[in-house]
Image (cartoon, rainbow, N blue to C red):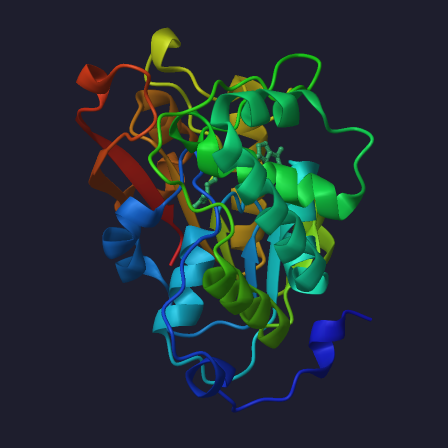
Length: 300
Ligand SMILES: C[S@@+](CC[C@H](N)C(=O)[O-])C[C@H]1O[C@@H](n2cnc3c(N)ncnc32)[C@H](O)[C@@H]1O
């Protein structure tokens, strides 16, 4: 049985226990922090459990637990195919003290000689235990170019060092709050392909799909969060899943690029396709960080 089936109801755990502000603990390509002020308008008023199967930095999840009076203690299922990323979430949830120690060590070493430490850490990894791996992931995320996560075909992180003045590698306060939130919301964390949530989803659950976007054109392509990529067939497979979950009476919200291909995939929901204005943040050329629109597609 899913542990969520036994939840106690009618409590808002967040208001009582977490009064300080908190935010996503990493920067992530395609992260939704900048769009939250628009996306929040599409969050349903009533739902049972929450699923975010392309969680990345979890911007919508953190926004929801921060901002809403949740009438009952709900269960959050956060997942992503990136196992290194999910290891970080799990470590923050279950091993915070050890993680903080590792991050403090990394911070001290980084400040002695940023470049040397960064490239040494980037080259190391597979011998590490899960706590050191999580600390390495956060450290590289806070100090690499633009907070970008990119791996090569061999799954090796290959982003160069970024230009930062005094980056905060160990954000003790924020990590402590993220730890509390995940424990209070009974967060379930999984590193798998999004389709695996199919067995857990029930009527009136809310799912936010934020997949790698279909590229606007070949040069704007950025889908390599992992070595698997996310191509046309993957977009079609996801759309089929959207239609399947719609039949199961779930509440679904999906983000993607504003392209004819995407609009065609979700043509049965044309009346519920909304275009949002945004500024693309991760692009090596700042000239190309121009306004463009992207889509929200919903079934309710
Ligand atoms: C656009 S990002 C999500 C950003 C997130 N909403 C945020 O606020 O940071 C897309 C995510 O999908 C993940 N991903 C790619 N292919 C996947 C798959 N087949 N199943 C699950 N997650 C996948 C990537 O690792 C990446 O974290």
